[in-house]
Image (cartoon, rainbow, N blue to C red; front, side):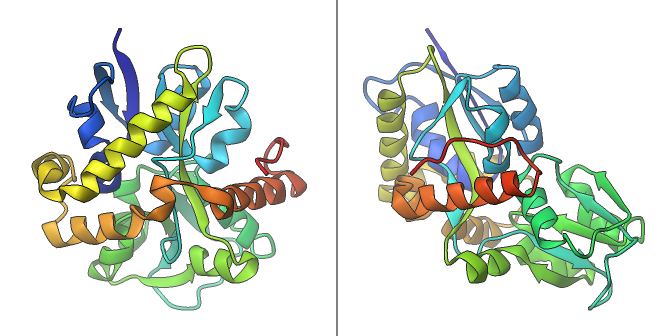
Length: 270
C-alpha cells in the first residue's frame, strides 16, 4: 500500500526526501508525493489528508490529536528565521497593512508574539511568491517572508525591519522551530517512519549530487547558488534529530503562544 506524503517544493524538503520518494531506501513502501506550500498542508493535515506531512510548528495545537510529531526531517535552526520587510527602514507597523504567508505558519505566530505592542491595522494572507513584489509595488506596507527570501529581498529594494529568528534566539537561547514532520496515527508506524526519513537525510548528505536534478526541477526558478544556500541553512543537525534543544524550542513556542491566547494549549514534549 502506497504512503501519501506532502511536503513543500522548497530545496530543503526535496533534498531531504529525495531518497525516500524515489525508492532508494530498502524496505520502504511506495510513496505518493504531493507538493504544497505549508499554508496548504497545515489545513490539509487538519482534514487528515496525508500519512506523512510537513506542517508549521505553529499548527501543531490543531493536529496532535490525529498526528504524531516525528523527531526527524523537519526544519529548525539558527540564523534562519522569518524577516519583516518594508520599503523604508524603521517603519512603524501600527495601523499598517502587512502581508503574511499563512495564518497558521510559524512565521506568523512569531510575528504576532513579536508585534504585540505594535499591532498592524490589517493582515492579508498572500501566496508567498506575491509578498515581496506586493511590498515593493506598494500594495502592502510590509511583508513577512520566509525561506529563500532571506537571500533575495534586496533585489526588490526592500529593507529588513526585523529578523524574527534573531529576536527569538536572543530571547530564548533556542533554535527557531519552523517546519515539523507528522505521522498520521493508526496509519503509519512512527518508529518506522522516523527510520525511513533519517536514512533519507543521511543518503542526501552522503551523495548530494543524486538529488540535484530533482531539487532544481522543483525549486521554483531559484538559481543554483540560492538553492544551495537554502539547503545549507535549513538542512542541519536538527533535521536528522530534533534532540532536546529542538523539543525545548517547540515547547517554548507553543507554551508562549498558548499563554498569549494565540493557540490552544498542548502537552509539553519534554
